[in-house]
Length: 243
Ligand SMILES: Nc1ncnc2c1ncn2[C@@H]1O[C@H](COP(=O)(O)OP(=O)(O)OP(=O)(O)O)[C@@H](O)[C@H]1O
Image (cartoon, rainbow, N blue to C red; front, side):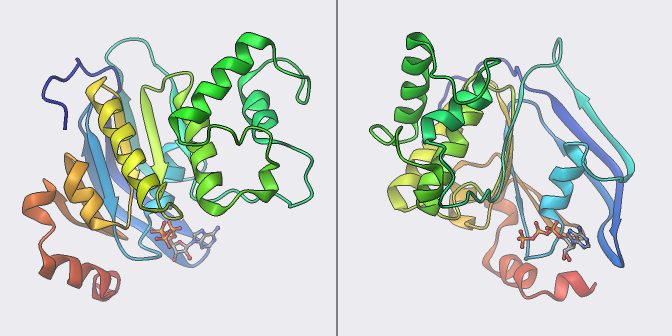
């Protein structure tokens, strides 16, 4: 991890008394959580533990109880989001470049990007190991390739707050290592990163703090202290969800 860190340009985030009921499921209950500006904060927990729900609340997509406060160091900056999955029909006539261009540009989708834009989008793809794949159809990409494209759209314009929902789930080893480097570099630039992850070794390697969520906060602190093998076993045994 980089020794010299820029001043945080991302916000701090406070979740206070967060509650969410979806149908008959209590997805979140009395969640109090603080994210420190300019840090990588990992959220771990069992399937159905409420991790994606927490992010949807933060993104304003769920009618939650409680409060969520973003403390920006100045004017609010750019929030980027990498979703868990995004499906594309195999026959959709949209290439990787079309996709990035449509997200990036105020110009109507499917118009060819200007040369300068195209060069920028190609360098975005290179950053995520997708050089040479700009003209592939989105629907023909592998899961890991699609994940890389979703990361590419989050990196440009440079985010101040980056929210990631299991970005590495479909990645091969080289891809996961690349994403870890990207996240570490962004943290070095003062970006706040909220990162849902199932790979506890990856969390131990690069997260500043980890919160275990199973409807409620089960533990919260530095990974080296909190992520003991016993605690991890307990968390994923689903006993947590029953409590
Ligand atoms: N729209 C919905 N309607 C009803 N229940 C829902 C809805 N969305 C999610 N849930 C339920 O809320 C709970 C929390 O789901 P959530 O997706 O937040 O979990 P998660 O921790 O992200 O799980 P995973 O690790 O599998 O991605 C689950 O029991 C899920 O079935």
